[in-house]
Length: 199
Ligand SMILES: CC(C)(COP(=O)(O)OP(=O)(O)OC[C@H]1O[C@@H](n2cnc3c(N)ncnc32)[C@H](O)[C@@H]1OP(=O)(O)O)[C@@H](O)C(=O)NCCC(=O)NCCS
Image (cartoon, rainbow, N blue to C red):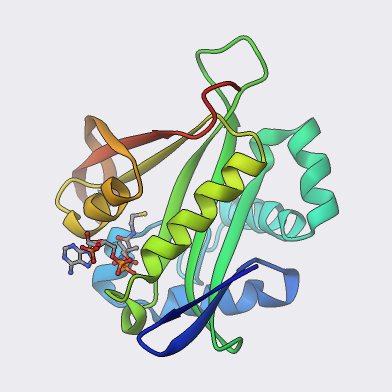
């Protein structure tokens, strides 16, 4: 756990635990339409409930128990989600980030990479919390010996692009039409960060 004071408010950044999963869903449900449009993980909130949603809840639940997560990381890393929350004054969830782990596609060795997702509650945006949470999840990825993190965001999400740049990521490519919002396909910016060059 790490603590940080931003604009006189104390935030703690912690691994997600089972009792807080529901609060993360509620945080997602309370995001503004714009923030939800920009952050669409597909397993948070009550809007996208379906079979995939339930399967991902099982992953989230198991991965919120440290000992189980460690075991899964060794045996079936492709089912692992590494979730962190930012708590405001230990009471309210102000932000959420996660890494979805998978084996490196181009490597024959046992290299693990991960996709990063992040959302800060609207009333806590623009205070530096996104940066702190990103820093914490990068450090966590290093501890878990991941080799690389990939972040995706809509091409016009300048806030997220700035945040990832500031956190050390570099733009790698634009994927045309990768994100679907309603009936429309949107281009996505891919950004990468090497976290452990020797893994
Ligand atoms: C993107 C997001 C996570 C950023 O979190 P945040 O707490 O608001 O960002 P921070 O305050 O830590 O700012 C980090 C950097 O982002 C950039 N940034 C923040 N607010 C910005 C704004 N309004 N316009 C442009 N850049 C901005 C800046 O570079 C900033 O660093 P600086 O203040 O030193 O210049 C947050 O806005 C969010 O949750 N958005 C909706 C979901 C989303 O877009 N997720 C990303 C895709 S997964």
